Length: 229
Image 1 (spheres, rainbow, N blue to C red):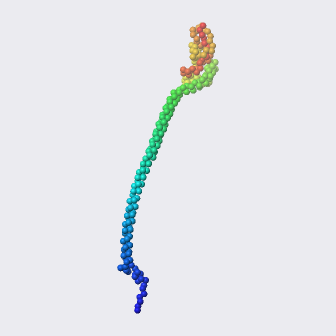
Image 2: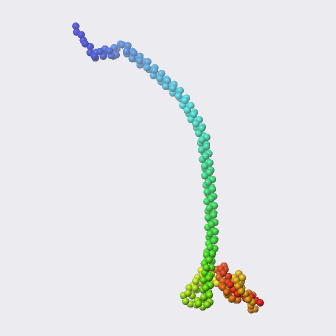
Image 3: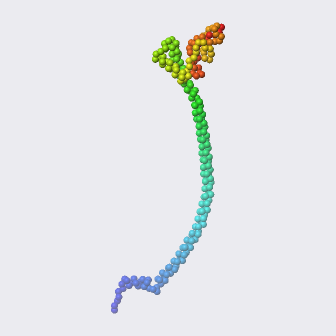
């Protein structure tokens, strides 16, 4: 009697689900799929319920944001008020700076005007100091000329040129001579004598000439005065 030894392939085919079309494994598998579908539906419903439950929470969050916006308004108002105060302060500082600048310009303009007005006086004062320093030299030149020591020669020419320059450039004038009327504003009487030939005080002798620069007297003339008897 022949016996057939089963092979591993035939064993697998015998126990395979496809090898038993009428077995309960197929129905079990189908049942498995049938029962899993409702589970998925329930999961979807649960997800929708969860989303629905979360939606009011998000609304609550938006309401909270609105409340935060309400809290930001006082902060924004305070910042605006601070900015306006800062602008007002800067405007005040600018106005003060403009006023100071205007006052400084006015002071500078007044200084320039006063300086220009004072320049001639400063020049005249400088000229006076120079001429007063030279008066002693001019006295020596005049005394040498009267003594006959300054008639000609190089020194005589230099002396004449100096006198002419002081006269033309600075208006220096020597005055005083015998026979002129005595003027107390221009002459200083060092001595006096009676003179029957005069009817008012006159200069009898010039002791030291006087000098003027324009209308300004630099030194009065020293004289001997003849008075009527």
